Image (cartoon, rainbow, N blue to C red):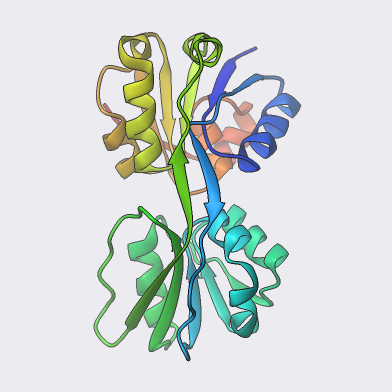
Length: 234
């Protein structure tokens, strides 16, 4: 049984913990951030919606209502599922790894203007020529300082999962030298880079979804891992 550190905010942390238990692992839920919705003003018009996180779909609130029938382009299956739960009826999840590739897919679909609903801190991607990008911050993630008990729990993990560059940076700082005995599995190369060096091993998911993240961490059986390939980094 592998002890797996989950630092993502709720409710995602509980969902990940349930999946890990079903796979026979021991989840250690010690969130580093607390997510809260922010008020935002929608633009008068747009042709499509862009989501790079499930939290944006969950926290967008009533202001999303005028756009629920528009094409909603998402990074990853989990974000797409959250978009459907929020009421979007035309959800599209192209085979992309990040927001930059998603913008290219949106432009290739003939879209000329897109509204990106996001958190406060995201990677910056320039839209392709001919695509107008409008961004609205719909949620923020504030840092949650660990108690002594939470820190001790986190330090006992065999593997740590990282879902964002900000999460990687915060986790590295919170664990300090203890990360040398822990393997890191990151959702993207940017997240792995932000987590820095000094881990027992680092791996990057081959696609921005949790199955690939689990595969990178060695948490899936051989058949499952074959369906969710990984890439390794230093």
